[in-house]
Length: 238
Image (cartoon, rainbow, N blue to C red; front, side, top):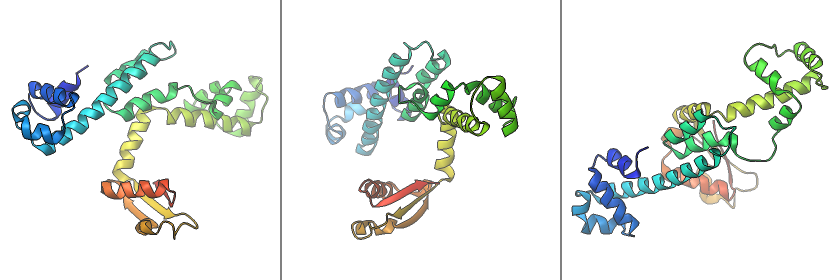
């Protein structure tokens, strides 16, 4: 596992000694303008723009490493967590990837999928998912009778759906692919909430707004976040 300095040295194409120097300066409380102006010999002459990017990335990686270590410490004590998951966590490169891998093992409130599993529907969900069991009402009803599950076929299918939806939602590979597709082809839309036109007048440009996600500039995205938080808008990604 590379150190933060190793990563930054590679990402910014600078010598490791400069990466070490810059990190040390920031850790001692030096600001970007100060380092850019007065410590050029320690940075290899990096510009203030590159140093700002370096600083932001350094902070991200520090937070990332702390979160990675925290999650690994928690899950390493859980015998139910596969070694493959722990290895993926060690090899993760982003916060999103960490949280996607951690999500299935978080201690949260009981879900509808948990209730369905307690009712004995996990084997049925597995059979339907793998194609070894038909999902027709008659076939599900027969399975329930054979396995002494006292519920209607409709209720059993609803439970199976909850189990499979949760499994898909917690699959880190599916989440990663979905996020990539959303960023590539997604559309961001927003609509003004009923009765909020006057209060949200300064956000009127977003009252009936639609734009490709990969085209939305940062300032516009921040404005949408502020308007939604108030709340003046309802925004979704499609």
